Image (cartoon, rainbow, N blue to C red; front, side):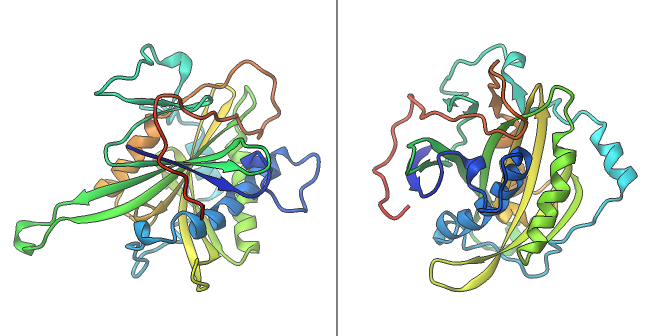
Amino acid sequence: MIFKRGRKRGSGSAVEESTEESTDEASLDELDDEATDAEGETSTEELGGEDLEGTDLEGTDLDGTDLEGPELAALDELDWRTSGPYDIAEVEDLESTEENPRIDLGSLILTAVSGSELRLQVAEETGEIASAMLVIETIVELPASANQKPQAYSSALELGAYAAPRSGGLWAELRDEIARNATEAGGTASLGEGPFGIELRRLIPVTTPDGEEGYQPSRMWVAEGPRWLLRGIVYGQAAIEDDADSPIVADVLSAFRQVIVRRGDEAMAPGDLLPLTMPTNVTPEPEDPET
């Protein structure tokens, strides 16, 4: 795994990267603003280069299928964490091994994916980590009859963990507001069934590094555990794959399922970002002055 870190302008907390319209009572609103802001910022700073240029939107139904109230409620009632992500109390062995390498970021413990890249964005003003992103490359073998070389597809998974009520239900409170903010920003949003219940798919208008206008597709996976909510925003090819069994989606899904959340015992308001720390068992590449 490659480890990089870069600087991000703005506040020291990813949750606080909201617009100036945020209010003091907006712990939950800040989480939804941050999701939209991060999507635009990620697309231009992280995914605008050659890594993910292979994403092809043609012929893809990005709006998905909106579910109705009873369907949403039925999905919310199910337990979607039987195969991860996990609370730290649910994991017996946290030791990092060659076969199961762990990266401890404080509130999040990741399992390194072969050939992937970990990017940590550090807020310039505070020096705190604002976000963690795994960039994952999937090699897809084509049928022998195609007589073509294997193709590589890049996807990214941006991770953040947040404090949540003991009773759960934070995702049900947030998703409609997040979807509404996406449409107000000139994009589209839809709710559908995903690997963790309700999945939010969005198209957000962005400006690429070379000044071109476009749309950044993403899908948002959310898992709720004991007093925490784990959000994963998927970008790149995995964001537009309709086949749930696609190896491209499977690689990103596996990385999300293997995340371990360390909530801690301190009192926090629902929607507050759980702090991330710099890992001690990996060495970063030289910092890119342009990030």
